Length: 323
Ligand code: ZN
Ligand code: ZN
Image (cartoon, rainbow, N blue to C red; front, side, top):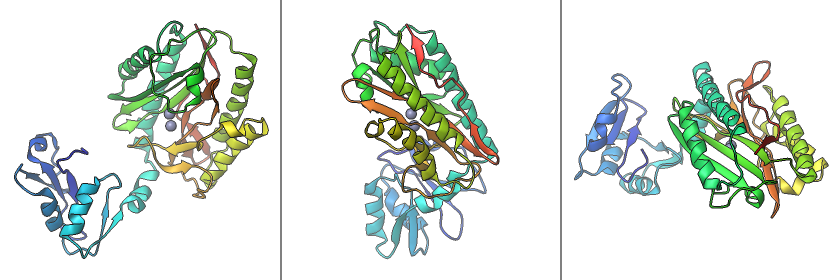
């Protein structure tokens, strides 16, 4: 856990791996004899000094990307001869391609969010605040099988133009467009899906923009196949949105990898020429954000399959009409 008390798995180039863990957290660790030994450390011990000692005779050491800087600086001071590097270079290769068991868990997580979307179709939005609806969506996310609901974005009316809007006290009214983006963890793996709702019939401007977005999102999903560069998927979505005149309103990359982390490699973005490979899993989530008026996004998780694409989310991508 990322806490001020250090938990760190130390893997030397030779010899056994050791999990340094605060003594009070040690009862929660499942022992894995043969994989690593557990070294609980007490409140008066120096865990960084212990880690520095367990590293062995290293010239280089890779550290988890999200390790707190205070621990890195302690290790650098204890072992000035060692060159420390981010572990991303190693971990990216290990984690980017999911094995079938991992894809199955991501599929289950996606299916659970699809069931929440189906329940939202039957939910009354009018007269409720964003935060009230967000709390209900988080509860549904748990009811449908997630262990934890990690985040819930409900962005209504003009708030929708901010892609990561924090749900607040705005009361939703007829005529609003509402962006709902939510996810959690199931079996340790993340879900993340977005659908756009209209309270009552959408205005012609919203209907037109959503038709463009739907075309862009579906074309990008259909473009996924092994060997294609990640940036090409971004280009497919972006070209359709640009050609329709909304280019300046699509203000983020098309997608991100997903697995144990909500956001991980591969990133579906211009400049990433990484060739997609079987087992990679990522989101495809173009959006259109018109300041002061409305926003919309459609997000699905997909897996790269030998023959093309394996969409993990299955709920309809259309503009969802609600009351
Ligand atoms: Zn999302
Ligand atoms: Zn996402």
